[in-house]
Length: 123
Ligand code: FES
Image (tube, rainbow, N blue to C red):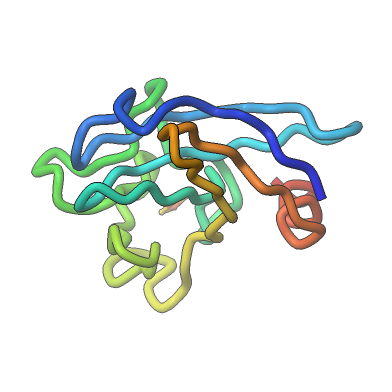
């Protein structure tokens, strides 16, 4: 298990996202954080439709309305709470969540598991 410091919780505004690419061993892990109701979530930056990154611009993963995660290629929409795709070519599939640990001093850490490492191999 690997624990990697990412940022502090106050570096992300409500309904905003922040992208990261980090090296774990020989692999590169591309993912983003989302703040929703004060809680930080993490998902792989990997659209289930074609297996490509969701965003064209750094840190831009939200729909124009700011209500959902949106893939910039074909417009698939994903729920903020769980990454479930309810509209678009990958409807019924989901983004891959990653494990985070938030410490008392509001520091956000990625807790890497084997599953996340395997998923990044296919990205
Ligand atoms: S690549 Fe994401 S919706 Fe097609």
